[in-house]
Every structure is written in C-alpha cells, then in structure tokens.
Length: 299
Image (cartoon, rainbow, N blue to C red; front, side, top):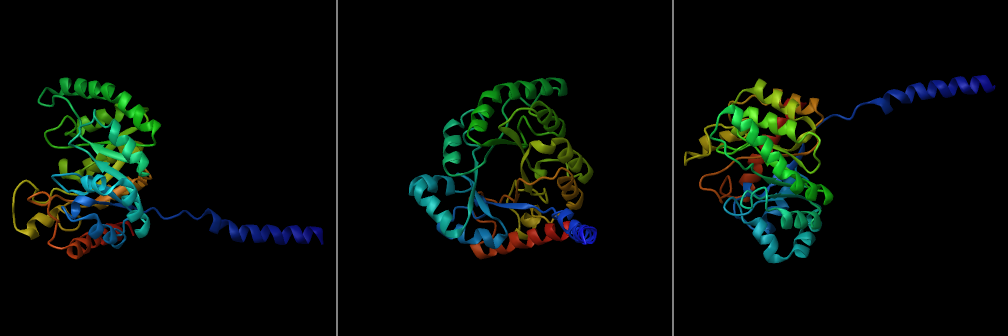
C-alpha cells in the first residue's frame, strides 16, 4: 500500500508539473504619458488611463502638457486621492526643463508620490568628432554619478532619453552611455525609436545592447516627423501601425531582454500642448488602436 501510494503521488506530481512550469506570456507594461492629452486637466485625463490599457500615468510639464504643474497646484495629497479613486499608479515625470543635473527636488516628489522614474536629456557638446563624442559621453556619466546615487537611494531611476540635437542622439552615443552606466544604480535609458534611424535591425540590436539599463520604452516612430504642422493623418504616422516601421523586431528584442518596465505609446502633436486628437475620447481611441497593433504582433 505504501509503494502504491507513493506511485500515485508521483503520477499526480507529474501531471501538475507542466502547469507549474508553464512560462507566463511576456507582454508590454503600458504607461500613459499625460502629454498625449495636451493641456487637458487631470480630472479629464485620469478616467481615460485604464481605457488605454495603461495601469499608471507619467506627468509632463509645459510646453507639452500642464499636468506636472497642476499636480503642484492642486496639492500632492489631492492628486494621490485622484489616483486612488481611479485605481492608478504614478509612474514618474519628464523634466527636460530641469535638465539632468537639477533633479534633486523632483526625485523627492516622485518618491513621495510612489513613482519610479524621471526622464531627462543628456548634457554636453555633441557637435564634435566621434572620438571626442565618446569622451564627452564618458564625462557625462561621471557627472551623473552623484545624481544617480541620490535617485537610487530614493528608489528612482533617471532615464536619459536619446534626443535630436543632444549629447545622446546617435546609436553610438547610446551604446557608450549604456556601457558607461552598466553598473551604476539609479540611471538608465529612455529609448525613443523616433530619434533613431528607422532601421528595425539596428534598433533591435540597440535594445539588446541596452538590455537591463532600459528604464522606459517609447512606442513612437518617425513617420513624417513632428517638426512642423501637417494634415492630421500624416502627423499620426508617428503612432505604431500607421507609419512604415516594422515593430516586430523591436518587440522581439524587448522580449529577449525580458523588458518589464513602462512602455508609452507616444507622439508629439503640432503645436505642442494640444491633445493628439481634438477630444479625450478620440485620443484614447487612437492609443487603443496602436496598443492593439503592438499586442497583435506580440500575440
């Protein structure tokens, strides 16, 4: 009887084992950038967040939005209550206006609100030779160490975005930055495909190179650019599924590095500070369309 009992128990364990070992399907973790709704008030934006498939919101300041300033105006406790009412988390903020070296106070605010990241640009001369550019990136990393340390102490990561006319602009500068910060807590990269050559293989390789230093990923392609006014159907080509970029290699690369940080479906309207479409409902619908495009490619 004892042997029979053990035999049956072993069969039962084998039957359960495949279920226990089944891998949880990888998926994107969506975050909403408040600037997608221009300067609409938080009271109007927050009910839209979950509709877009996101679980939290990131706040932008002027000129792209007004929600970061609004949070201060209404009071942080009030904003926390609004988030709780909608069942939302707070991701962080974008603070290009402050630059990467003046974020101490913002780190405190983001920590207080339960956020985990602040996006900023690089700093340094970029109109130089490739050899000098590498040295300038290395110097930037050195300057960022105390700021990254402060961020890490507060559970925050400073995401340096690659951006046109910026120290961190080219694929090489991104690689050098990723290598320089590899072992530095509190600093990472916010990767914007828009600001890179629209070469899927190149971008997928960059994603793998950045690897665990990816703080935030923008689902944002170049399309027909965001640099000037144009018909809305052309402007919207920055959104996944409307432009020419094949997102599948990028998504495969994100899956390969097991990226579970925030992904923002993103674009810039012209002029800045307006919703990407005239109403909150239309804006939400367009974000949902882009999400479905990405999710279908993953599926």
